[in-house]
Length: 55
Image (cartoon, rainbow, N blue to C red; front, top):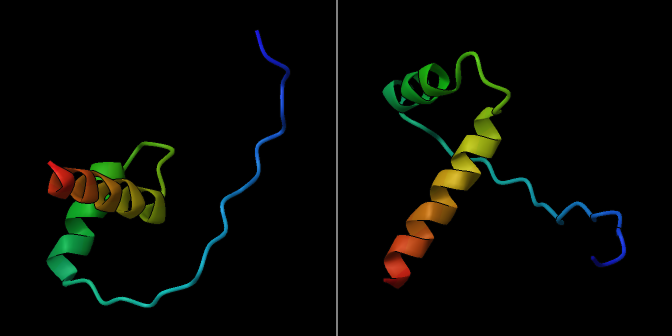
């Protein structure tokens, strides 16, 4: 097993985007009762969409 390394937080940049209210409600309902944040959900969704585009 390799040596443990303390992970580095990825660099981030603030971007302001507008979401339709219905999308916000759906995301908030989907993450309700979880430890997931709105930002984490959106980042995961965008990464998934980007992977789909590569295929």
